[in-house]
Length: 395
Image (cartoon, rainbow, N blue to C red; front, side, top):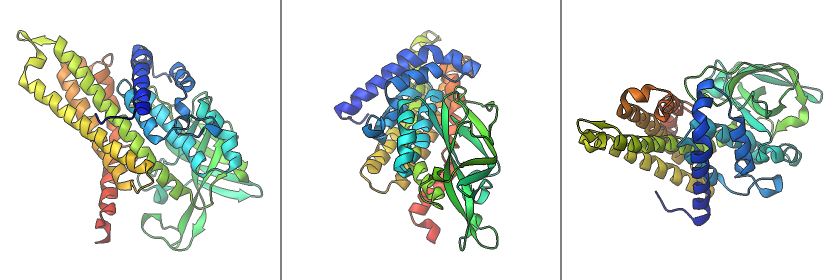
């Protein structure tokens, strides 16, 4: 592991201890029941984790995105549901308001989001959309006097229906502009004008579905949202009108570094659990770690994890330095997502029948890993972004 500055290392150790001593003993039961981990969230809030990259003037810790990444990696070594709850609340819920909000919006929302008193959500994906976000968007917002009237729906929205969800940033079409092309062009060649609007939880016209029944991330809250003549004040526009898609692209670049850290944590958790198991499990007169086939498999897992960590550290370094990092974020997300999936598969194989049991962490890791090749941009989208940054789309 690259050597960390003392402050970062102290934070990492604190998160490691929290994951081991607080999360690990209870998460298995919560996961099996599909319960949102309210007590764990409350304790993370008490540690200031939800405000890590938010300035102190808004109630945050005054840290940075890399500090958040270190915490996410340590949490995901034990459970990804807890890690994604924190990641989505900070990267997707609070940071867009900090990056693009007015002074009034920041003062209203950030202190409660940074304290963990409430969670924010990010309403981008739609049921008929997917990777083609602008082309697939159907949610609209029309300005009626001093109110936005929102109609449409969003799918797969994390943290959108908990008891402490406070606000959802919703991307919606607020008009059309001349020009544009490809999948984004509609209505006689005009492209959609996408804006972001803050919708407080409980607003009339906002309906929150029952939580999804998911393959993994069973303790994470994920739901569909629908909007029927949902009215919010005109002042709830986040940033400049028509800049919503650009805002979310920036948010996603930063979020991909965080998801890469989470993926690295899952990959590391697979190594951790496998090392424990192969020292204890015996076959044919020896611990199974004695056999070269097992040694090679774990060696490959360690290589993937190490590579993934280096990739997200490098992306985070460029991000914090204010340098372009779109390509590095895509590389980190792609490499780490693959590492998580491959390591989960190998760890399950090492555990044999026990790896297929949900009571063992590797069973949960296997269920959780696949989404890391899909969420925050599929692996195919990451390859597309890397190729575009290399100039290949101009050929």
